[in-house]
Length: 41
Image (cartoon, rainbow, N blue to C red; front, side, top):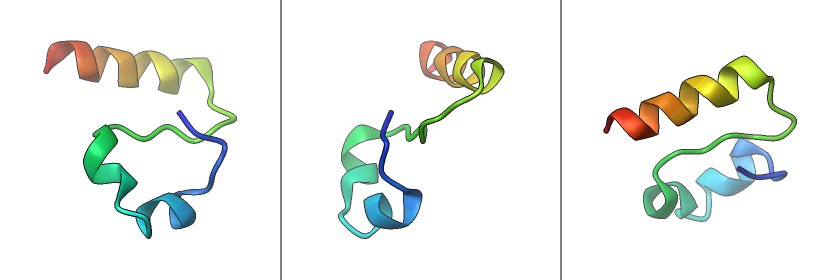
């Protein structure tokens, strides 16, 4: 989870290291979906 925009993060190769990116503020349903996605991996 990050307060940085996707544009800043994607240019620093951080996405490859963290795997899942969620930009704040995030709605609870989106957060729950991402958590489920990670747990199902």
